[in-house]
Amino acid sequence: MNQADIPQLIASLGFFKDWTNYLLVTTVAALGWVATKPLILDGRALRWTIAFFCLSIVFAILTLALIPLVGERLVARSSIYDIKAIFTVFWLWGPEAEAKLKWVCWPQHVFFLAGIIVFSVGSMLRVPTTK
Image (cartoon, rainbow, N blue to C red; front, side, top):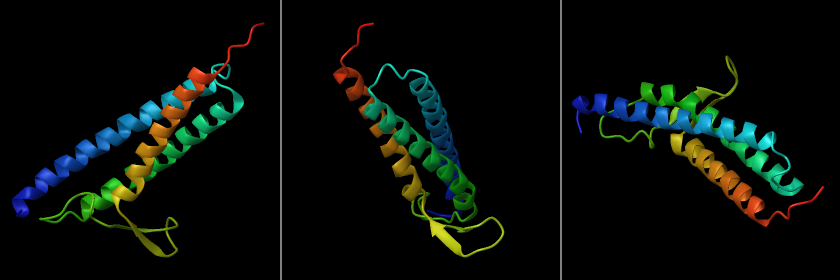
């Protein structure tokens, strides 16, 4: 890779941002839908589904926050997933920390899938109540 590859890395970072954004919007919509349909799941499955979706949303926001920091540090012969983004823990003060995109995007995906799985299994196992 050479410096001419930087635009390709920026494009891949853009595609990654778009994917993260789409998954975030989908998760927020799924969370809103599940939260308004409490009769579909029993209490435990509903709570776990909501918790997993909430955690996915938190990690999506963290992922989106890291993307510009990764973009600032792009260098030839690198992967967007291997670049350490450096940031201040608190907005204007505090210690500096570093994180890679993988550290926050993987939990986003895992928690989203866990929410979908718990919702699906909980829906299949729920015994309908008659009124």
